[in-house]
Amino acid sequence: MSFAAGLISTGVMTIIEIPFWKKWGITGILEWHENQMLSSKYFRFSHPDSFLGILSLHFLNGSIGGFGLLLGLILIPYLINIHFLILGSIYGVFLWVFTLIPIHKFITEINPFRHPLGIGPVILSFIGHIFYGIMLISLFRVLFIIRQ
Image: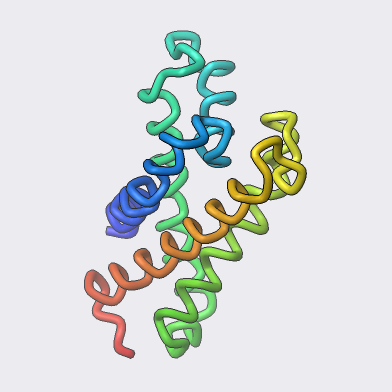
């Protein structure tokens, strides 16, 4: 169920990102740009602009994030006592700080804080991760009957 919650939460994050992709292109969506670079490098069948590769990795990462939250709640059970909006925001920021920011420049050769499109892509990514975290913990509340 945590896998499914991660997929759904990634879907919400993706919907939020689509209008900005239309405005900025792939490089303006930090997560998609990383996935574009990785899929074109490691999946020989994937064209650099292939949405199959880009979104497959995006949704795979999101589903793993769902499992990560489940693991966090198992290892640190008192996290359940934190209000879901706060916990979801914290988890989204945690993922952003520890998964996206450290690897983005390495994968794309673009420093997210010195992005050619300005500060917009990094702000969108940050907000998108917060929405992801809130959606994920909200789904956990329903799926795992977490009380708050």
